[in-house]
Image (cartoon, rainbow, N blue to C red):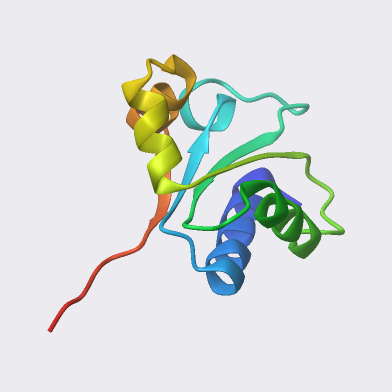
Length: 108
């Protein structure tokens, strides 16, 4: 599977099954020059009681993939606290990453 296609497919599955607030591509595919061995780095933001359990569920939903993936799941509150606490890694993902999906709030 070509990696750009895989990124789109993975994002569609995550959005359809898990309804996240945001999915962000980071790492070499977002801000560098990926090579044939580069994995796909995805940062998923979702309100959940357990980010580790959600990460496992997403990983299972993407089972059978032939492209390596590195998945990080944070709640919106954890993102905020991490940035406020000086976590430069999370800050860079939020500021420099490529937003693949963002939930829109439509109030009428």
